[in-house]
Length: 404
Image (cartoon, rainbow, N blue to C red):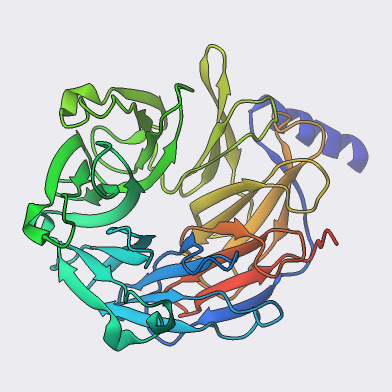
């Protein structure tokens, strides 16, 4: 009788378009701390800044009011604290990203600040690579055109006008928020010569991703906006170098999520049909926007029990079984709630039957955007993230499914 009852429940659940979750699989992954010496670590951005073939990390510490760069240690030392440098002190940083602004070979950082600061800053790197970890050799300068203008959230390095140094697509939240193009001048050290061009009104931008959405050979901007009348997931079509300065030349193409509070998004070919999909998340669900020949199809994957509210996603093959999985991070993961898990499917990602697997366990409350990368060189993808309430700092979870 119990068997038939379980079958009936399963049939009803499928008919209600809900996802069935199998039992949680596996123990939490082993955590390795990169740095937890300050407060409020808020995001990780990766780039190989010293050309050693290993990815380094930039992070802003929101409550600590510092911007730090971490150099990937030599192989075998990744599980220890990483070599680090405080490149500048700014209040309420939300984002820090690597970019060699003046093309001198020394990779600088740009930080975006909200709160009462409401400004963006360039942190100029020392020209000599041997001085990269010397905090006294770094210089910080505010970008005047951004000062006090908006609550800056995120910056994306891109070449927009085909001239001078690389530019930045920048974004913000709250009153007067926008997606804008921060145009670099001929001499990027001339701080007063930077220009700001608004491309799109915004509510609260969470994601900016450089990707060729229309397969025309140039990079467009994929966006997630969690608040306001224009919220949702959309992409801005790059109009070309001459037309880029005009706001109405950046055509907006909506993908979905206008009825949700979408947070961080990621891209990947989840169903491996040759088209890049968009994986979004809100507080209760993962939303898979499947790209089809006719447009975008939406699949809702409710978050499993025992986790916090959704914050970010990543698409990759976690356990080397040849199928793409979904990693997600959470905020509000208090008490026994988990802050990070991964989801797998058996027959098809459209089958609505997913299995969830533990990554973080109980430690950690407010996780940020998860980035998947092979930190220890063992052939599988580890999870890099920040946490800013239990002060876990900057860290990575070691993937137990080694490919070697």
